[in-house]
Amino acid sequence: MIEGRATSRYVRTSAQKAKLVVDLIRGKDVDSALATLRFTRKGVAKDVEKVLRSAIANAQQKEGAGDEIERLYVRECYADQGPTLKRIRA
Image (cartoon, rainbow, N blue to C red):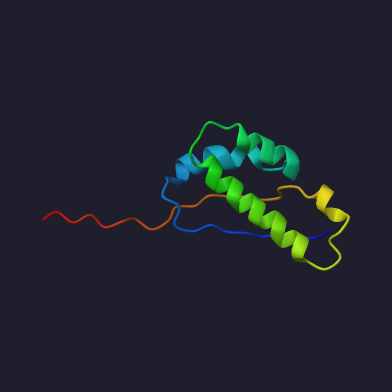
């Protein structure tokens, strides 16, 4: 089985909001995951969709990946907390 990985860093949203979207696609095949993200009414869904499309493209670049692209599914996905911006008061 081939594997495609992708990460996105410094996305300007909270991890709590991103986890709501990520939980919707975990365990689904990529076609239904992309359809779910397309019709999800959350702003972070576009960012998650870009990462998923990047992972699909990375899987296609692997050698011998011709027939296995239709069988791809989202095995694991998560959204962790990123760096906190410092606030300066002048």
